Length: 190
Image 1 (cartoon, one colour):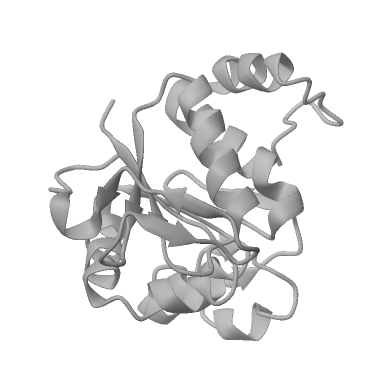
Image 2 (tube, one colour; image 1 turned 90 degrees about the horizontal axis):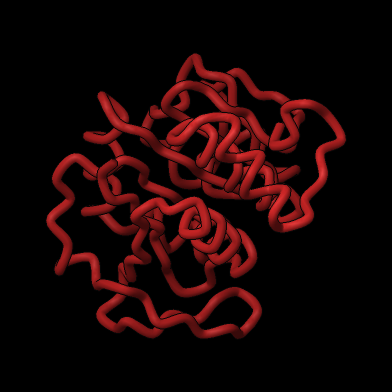
């Protein structure tokens, strides 16, 4: 299993980034946080400062498993303005996996054409920015290589969908059950 990366910019949504990081690590996945700033310390939208594992320029993104884009404002806007990340996402969209939550599907992925003709969801109020996507009103939309979610309350389902995609449904259920995340539906991360 290749390394996955969660990208952090000033103003990222803390619960979205850190829930995914925690759940993926509990599942035994290799995942690193990456700051797109010049500092490992990145402040979230609600004042929580996180020390990223790596700076963007320190990472050799050879065949990453997942590129994960948290939302939050202005975090998603800051990510969308970072050219090297845009190039990486476009390249990843051809054969790799991408996950984005909250405003990120609309603000980061949609302008790059990554969601064109694909089912996706995003934070309410950002739907019009996803004109090329097949927009759905759902907490999480999990496709084979793209997973999107609509906001902070979907962070756990979003993270477990990533685990299920990489490691199988039973691994996601085991991690979710261990965290007392009980399913409402059989596929509880949707």
